[in-house]
Image (cartoon, rainbow, N blue to C red; front, side, top):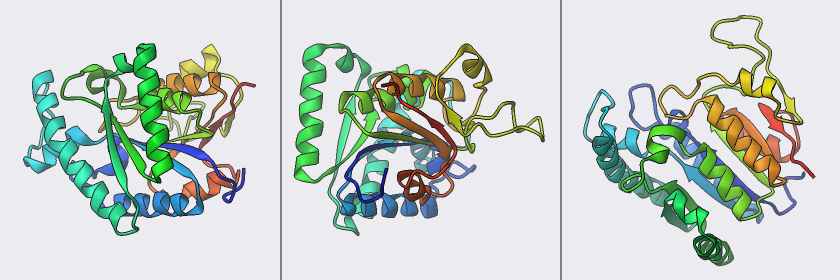
Length: 260
């Protein structure tokens, strides 16, 4: 894969990538992420951003220090944070003259044939317009992603729906390790996974402490994409410029090879 070959790329960013430990927006990282995605867009790639972070940004907007437990509170925070999140994306991408669009939907849309078809039509038309879709599950009316997923499986399902060439999931670890790196100093990064076996699934521990998606959901998402013939890379989101290396085929994080 070359940086210059036109690709349809889905990039998923988690809460831990977009926010500081304080819960406030990591403006420096978000700005760099946008500049890289805008640059890939300018190269001719079709870029789709699946973005978490609405609840955390909603908390920051209300100066709320502790994440609430009640689902209705999380849904309300998502409603507040989603507007703020899109405002920031619109402003940052606008500096590079890239038009962004918001796509909020619930997973049941993807389970209905007519819903899938209409959603695919929307994606394709937006990409034909040269817009950059920003995707999130509609957390204000759906609780699945709020409680379980942090958009990992959503990003893989979207990648499969639009027949993407590549799915990159940015998280707060370097990739999949053979043991928990926070507990074992000799933990080794697994750079390549050709098949998701029960042993690989067993290695998936908890990660993404400021989001809801542990590594188990990332492995599940990787399997969805691999089964659809899509290459997956899971990498640390601290340096969004890694996307260039990934497109050049260099080893970054953990790469999951697609099935034929």
